[in-house]
Length: 67
Image 1 (cartoon, one colour):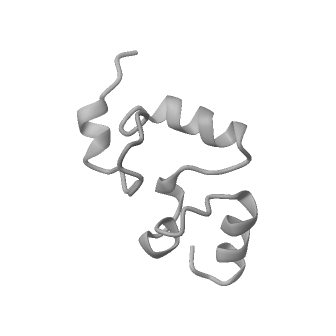
Image 2: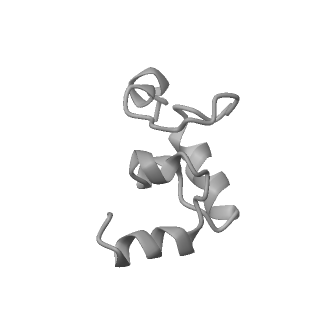
């Protein structure tokens, strides 16, 4: 399967500018899961900007009805 980086970048809401994984979703997901996190695309913009991508933060947002 060929990576569609340019197409993926159109939907990527990651605000961490020096990230080398932007648009390469398979690498991004693999990295974040290994850190017990979810990638930026799982979070609303206001939560993504905090850079807290932990499972716990995601669960809190779900419980608060923000996701």
